[in-house]
Length: 376
Image (cartoon, rainbow, N blue to C red; front, side, top):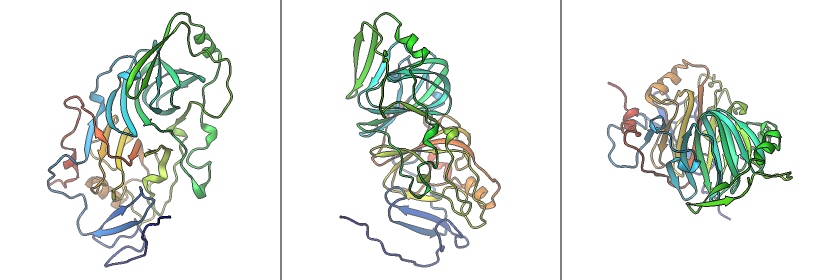
């Protein structure tokens, strides 16, 4: 057995409780292990911990605008790779064409987040409609295709050699955050039966070990007559997520966990009331989450902790340095100028360092690292 060294220490001028009633004129910084679950120290600084005046070197906060990507092909395997490591691949796919073939991911479970558009998913398990704001979880090696009704933009998150599972919800119980009853699964309905009878040759593009294999069938492989079990494709819309809240304490991002994979988690930030207690911090706290890289995809709304961020943008904060709210957001939180958030965002916390793929020129905002600097 192993245990962290843990013993309570208080040195100098500190708050009695984390994220509440900070000493006058100080800025709190959390240094934590295990993504907010391990030992932690809260330091109280005279200056904002992100108040750097210059930054040299590649290990810096980065921002990318996926709105500048051009649509690519009518297959998910045409998607643009954004970020990756051995356990995780993040892609973005835009298409206005229905798929004339099937795809199958042999490398891991796939999570599709529907940023824009709507349509119908046909897969081994049946037929499922989808629209903006849906998460769709596809177990490894599921065959599927999309019939697109409105042009789609999908954030594709592959759990390479892994699977998606539920987060442990502890004291709040299994119905908190989202009730499993809201999950929807594909049905063997009339639409599925009709498509299964389409004649002709069908191809399955199997991605395995990073390579594409083309498998041809003289019939439609999506021809299930029935199935029973507890492994299936399912969808969850962000509107069915009811976030944990405390009016007296700013909860860490881990409280918003939606899916857990082997070396990363997916969290969803949805609209919620802002803390009303006068002494409670009202914006994300400055923190060193030194075991994880943090990625946020901004879906819609007013992103209150970030400046000059629009829907469709994605940020990467590598582990090893302090990050937190931009100066204007921190000042607005201190004045309690807003009573609720108006944002929807997908966060990925990755234990293994993420590499940035080769991306088109102009997609990265190279000045993002300077956005924490106070304006003169």
